[in-house]
Length: 251
Image 1 (cartoon, rainbow, N blue to C red):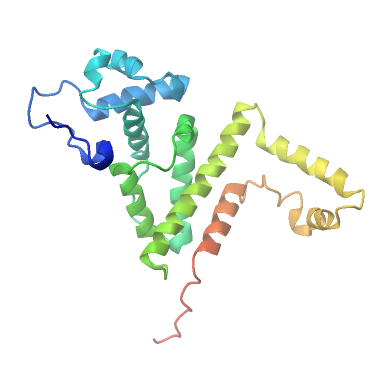
Image 2: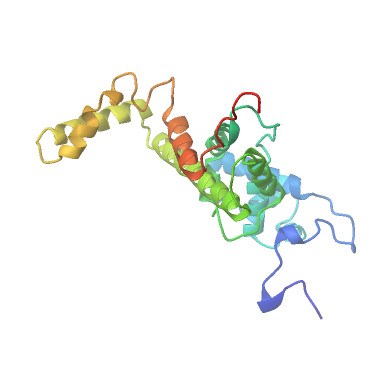
C-alpha cells in the first residue's frame, strides 16, 4: 500500500497536487468554493472560527468529505490566503520607475490586509506560495525591471518590501482594534515626547522634535504625503540602487 507522502513522511504541498484526482468520482466542490467559504467566515468572525467542520457546513457537505479536497486545516488556510492574494490587480506598469511601481503595489497590499485582517494571523513563511502569490511576485519583478539588481537581490527586495507593507498594516489594524484614531494618537505621542524632551536629558530627541520639517503641516498625518507613502518610498529608495544618470542631449 502506498500514499502520496514524500521523503521523510512529509505530505506534498497542496500546490504540487492536482486539484482533481484522475481516479474516482468527479468532485462536487472546488478549491475556489472551499476557499471562498473560509474567507467569508474569517472576514466575519476571525480566523479561529475557520475549521474543517465550519467550512464543510458552509458549503453543505460533511466534514469527512472535505478531506477529499484538503488534507489539513493548514491547507485550507493556504487556499484562503492565496485566494485573497488574487484580489491584487496586475495592471501594466505605470510611470515613475521601480519605486512608484512598487508603491502602487504597496497600496493594494495594504488595502488587502485591511479588508482581511485575519491574513496577518497566517504565517508569512513555511509554506510554498500559491499561484496568486507567485503572480504577485511576478508583478513586483516587472516593477523592478529597470533596477540594476541581480536576480537574488530582486527577490530579497520583494521580501523586505512585502514585510514592510505587512508591518504597516499590522500597526494600523492594531490601532483600529484598540479604538484609536491615528491622528489623535500621533498628536498625543508628540505632546508626550515634547514634555519628556523639555527636561533637557534627551537633547537628540528635543532636536528632532524641534526640526522645522516637523511643522504642523508636515507631520505624519499630513494628507498631502501620508506616512505610509513616505515610509515605503524611503525604504524602497534605500533598497534600490541609484538610477542611471540622464543621457546627454542628442545621445
